[in-house]
Image 1 (cartoon, rainbow, N blue to C red):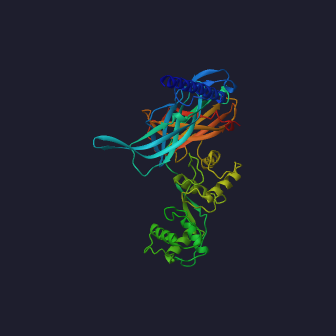
Image 2: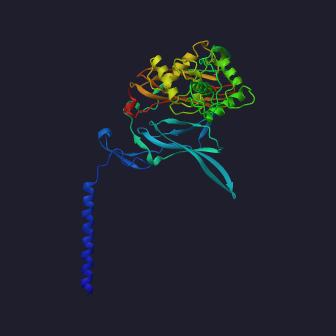
Image 3: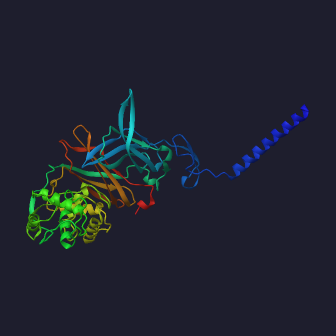
Length: 456
């Protein structure tokens, strides 16, 4: 019995060993061949570089992207510019794409222990060249909460490593910067001038809640010019609750008592004097400069300023609505503006459109002086050292105080021809102290050398 059991055990073991080797052979037979990107997603892993675009077969070990978790923030025009520096130590490989997150964090003490709470996060994706040090910048509208610090993190397990389109783009210094000139100004806004009103309306009857018609439409068009009076900005010819409340605010603003919400004789008299074909005092828009692109759906003070400026050009923006919302009316106004000046008609307040409008606003300022309303004005040239024409070139600039502490940031983009030179002008309107200068290494120019669609 014992001898029989022993033989059965030997047969079973040999059978299992045979099955194992047969299975291993089948696995090896159907296993995919190693590719150039096998095993290079994380720090310390080896990748096999075999043939094709990778040329020779060799073992690759890639370093993770380096960064400090403590990020910085600057408040400019009710927006936070949050930023951090990322370093890629790899000689040949860049990150075609990596994900990052800024965390707004509060720190509290509970029972003698420090507790950190994440109250907001800002996520994004970016790229970085081989051997490049790069600043990552995001713009966030000032939150309605307090925070103690901003933490920055990169998911190094999901970095998409790649080589540039050409070995000519291995060097991170693809661009040269020259002729840097920084000028500072007072930031004072221009004085008021007298111009004819763009709106000419006469009101011949009282208007109250429930009324409809052209008179109500005209009334709403006037009220919608001021978002503090009529934040809804709806112009539909119906005297509804929102219009009633707007009339009360309007009456309060011009010291009419009692404030009934009815367009009575006193209110009509004021409206007819202001909009009945007479002249009124309005702010001149010359000397103002825009430093940020805007898109459909944006809601902020920059949109209000854009609407205020375009209102002075009734052939572009006949509605003249100022409500801080980048709506369809503003989009149509920009399309008319772009068509008039031979720009690509996008309906967006993009870099070419912003540049053209700034030229119009500042065409009467003395050359060599900082335009009114501007606290700092920076001019410099970018030269493209490569033989490729880039459709999108990202530009980040930092200004520092006398102690080399960053106090202002600007972020924009442009296109640039092969071996071409591009003049760049950046402006700031936020208050600054004295002894302002461009930060050491404070002019950064980047372009995506992994994206074929970026090459013109």
